Image (spheres, rainbow, N blue to C red):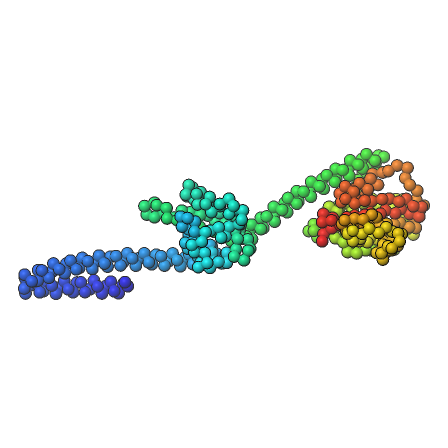
Length: 412
């Protein structure tokens, strides 16, 4: 009933009362009975008007509430019955989960819960917590109609009537997926940073300890230790530019050899594109640094005419041919020509790297194995599961490195 209708009824009641009084003045007996009847009618109509006014106010409040709920499209607002089935579902919930209201009414809230939460009856547990504490926090992954996962952030609260009796539950949450993913990414970055810092400190400690053990005096220790630290620093710079996703073998060699006049006249490098994971890149960097340092002191880089050549080739998984054996493939021939020895059959793809020095002073095997040789051989074996061999040929040092291209070594 509109305001105009209420005013019209009230006006008619007052008009009838005026007419009844006027009639009572002319015919008192009949007029008094009419007045009594009109009084009863007036009371009934007044009660009806009051009811209509209260009902109109209630409907207005419900309309405002529904308008607010339906306008809050950034929030999923839904109500549940005592059994946990959906009783109402606002447009924000449709936007968040992809279900229209008619698709979910009367269905269990398990519809949007993950299999893990369904297994532990999260829907039941959340209602119990809301009953006991007055609210239950909701911070977890939910499932959408299209299979996507969204991070719902909000809470569930009990709905009670004026007498305090439990009628159902109100659940409000928002899509906080972006913030959640950002927080997880930040945590992973911090964990990775912590891991890398610990590894770096361990590497520095090992370098310092081993360099000290094999140094003849403090001056030699300082020179060797500083050189190795700078090599490690260059590798870190290279990986930082790629946000620690990895680096190619070509980039790694160029960065390592740059301090030793890394011009085409002194170095020749070539091979297929291979991207090494950070730990593998650091291991190879230290190996190449030791080789370059040795070449600068005693080998090809100690004279102007010396040359260092680094070549590498991939071999397919299960490759079983041996260099020089009958029936070898074209790839075997290429590997043999490059000086890369093929080995026994392997179950994973591998990379063969050959460091060859020419044009330097005559080479003879050392009387004792130094730290540099052990760093190359043990580092390749322990850190990346490969194998390194040093051949002290008269014409120049040859280092052969065989590396398995596993996920922890190569960035696919």
